[in-house]
Length: 412
RNA sequence: GCGGGUGUAGCUCAGUUGGUUAGAGCGCCAGGUUGUGGUCCUGGAUGUCGUGAGUUCGAAUCUCAUCACUCGCCCCA
Image (cartoon, helix red, strand yellow):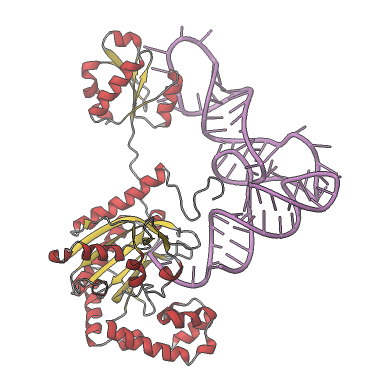
């Protein structure tokens, strides 16, 4: 605990940036509402098993990135590294299976112990959605369409592309995995150190390797598409057709793999090249087995999550700069306080400085980009009036107190 | 966890081959007469030179360690 620094990988969000954050969240939530989603707020920590059992013991997230600690009663708790497991847990705990289908939106901090980089922090924020209880590929289409809609509304400056793949159902996935492992084992000596490790923990990851040698080996590896069984293939085709029907362009990436164990069928990522090594802006997939595996009623699900910091860096939106009114007392501070309170009650955004002479207060008003100043001159005050100065034009006039709100209306 | 780069006032940076009082712009504060901002002029304050050791007569400038940031790997949002 050295000096007064924020913990590595955490950041203070000052008002300007916090406002951007909120704006991104609000735009996303606003659109999600149009699609019928309601917000759910789950705790930022859960019993450790909620994550360790369901994301997959060998995944990086579980094996080396969780913030896990014991509370005073000795329970092992973990700061959530992602949102889906908590929502699934809530679904079961709260008996929500009575209300299917369920459309949930969430936002909030997530925690992952990783080496910080651009667009990657230890405490970061995500917003995401989960659609539970729908087996049909229509759910996949709706959820992906929502994602595309949000990104569009955020005006992402840099071109974003949607990559899509199918992992197939459990049977298809297992069959493919076996085939791939056999293929890779036969070429073990040509694989990079990292990929040998992947071969052990998550063989599909080898497909994604950036290593030159690996890429050569992988180039003629068996294709996932060839191992999809009939049902899985039909499902994928329907998702693709649906997306094309709603006008969403897709790049099929047969090497696209998800990091967490619970995914099946549809996997997708909206990617960009504008964030350095972090190409993913929004990603998700289908997880039909998760809730059953956690001990709840077998319930299909599909969802995605997006990093708010990443969205904020790319989004072409700016919080509306609402300009305040400023009250400037000349003599009686108490009268100014009362008048300020009155105007605030009337719905105006008003700033009343805490100290300083008139010049100083005017300068401050300017800095706040105030629209107008209400000046309480002693002389005018004696006549039950104040001076209202338009700070853009510099013109000012005397206004009787009884007419103040009316006169101020145009500065709202 | 691994590798590269960086670290000087609130911010952006300069600082010559190690040399004694560490600078600029912006910002901030105070003035430019009596109740008025945004421009302009004048003046002022602010630095453990990331931190800790070491080399040296002497270090912001060299060495080592450490911390933070940053880029890439891993992985992901």
